[in-house]
Image: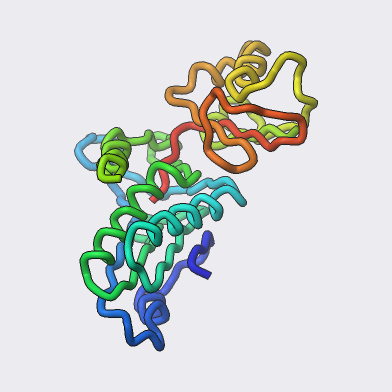
Length: 155
Length: 82
């Protein structure tokens, strides 16, 4: 199973090891781990005490599978693993994990970044932050759409 | 058909979804959005949410996408995962 949407935390080392277990063709693994930040960077807003991730069950898994399929079509990949957590998470906790195995590093680095950029704008997750001033929905960032546009120009 | 609402839109509407018959004269996601917003009050959030997104049968689509009775249609704000 290359894609998981779950409440539970995950073991980064075990996931990376499992991705290439028994595959002597793999020469590279690139991975990304996203964490809950306690402060709004640069906004001077109140500290984030916790974050709750809502998603669209069914569509979420399908959207992530689609993104992985697109990455496999673009680069020569040996394995892909995507885990996204949902529910209530505290600052410092892991939210998302992407790991890509390939023969050489370029494919792994590029595909890992591509998957994160697509996930940010195409997978139906929404973050609600708990602050001393109450809950607030996180706004989508223009820079995320711009990151996606970069891959589309390269197509 | 089934219509679903998520995140800030779900909160604004006070509903996570509803079962309904495809309204007469509604053939697209945009027309369905406008039909629901015409209920007024909190439902105006459907036309006032910045960069509202929609999906038909769990695929993200535009507001010109066709809808038919039996479809699952979802409306939501821009996604913020990762």
